[in-house]
Image (cartoon, rainbow, N blue to C red):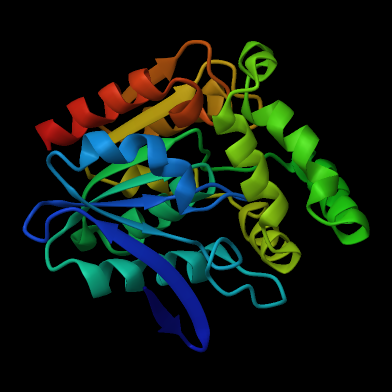
Length: 262
């Protein structure tokens, strides 16, 4: 299924019973809604799940040019409004968590709770050269030029040594991401600087982070947790950026326990 956002197709899928509370799940940069596959069986016992592909990713359109987080959050708001008549639980990892923070500040009436996973509220200025380098690599060599380095950041060495099928599936998502979509979303998230604003969020909030995440580290999760009053923080040992995949059972347990209380 899809909806039209001013000529841009945003793709989504729905699993579960129509009368169950709705969970909306938002993926990372260079991934797709498929990254949540491992959480779906547990969620469907109690929830209806809406997963969407951020513009530039998966089956959504990838217009050329820079995107911004206002635009990405407006896309997500349109998905929520089209598919839920009650407030939803938001679950977002990395870029998906950034989008969730924007929605929580702009349209808190749409959300029942907020789960922010391996994400940040501020991209440090010192990381900008690294973003420039990634964009240069993609322009010169396509997404395959980034896949190995990205996988190395997203999973711990021990997990990678086992070469589980899950890693191969995530690698395939990276390599099939649109170059235009990757560039557009990088231009959106590299400008993120809302740390001083998120204190206005009053929703029940869970922050989850992999203990070994190098890109959105525990310190970034701590900063969010410190500013959102009443938020909860779960640090998952032996997990890097894709903590929902690498420590799937522990992540799902923490997620379900939180959702069931809210």
